[in-house]
Length: 93
Image (cartoon, rainbow, N blue to C red; front, top):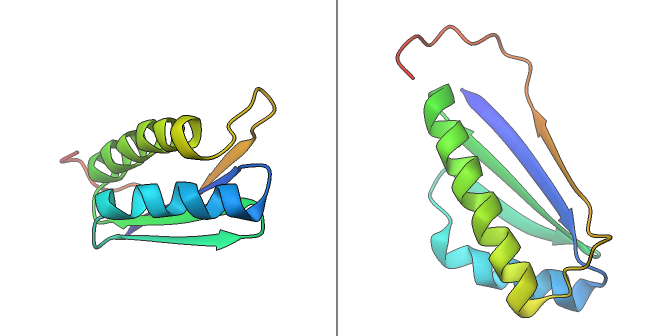
């Protein structure tokens, strides 16, 4: 299993809740999203590295749009992404 966690901050909890609510319809079964204060934290788990990369890429685009439309994205918005350190042995990405 491959896993990535994306954390974005949105200024305050209300903005983070609006962003998370905007993202929810596009989340797949392999995604969990929660609000922690002013942060939206999403974890994506996929079997293959290629699928993880595609899902995270789609999520980041959706998150930027959601932040611009509903929740206080600014030049100071910060995001972090963490992936687990499981060696990639999947050659069919």
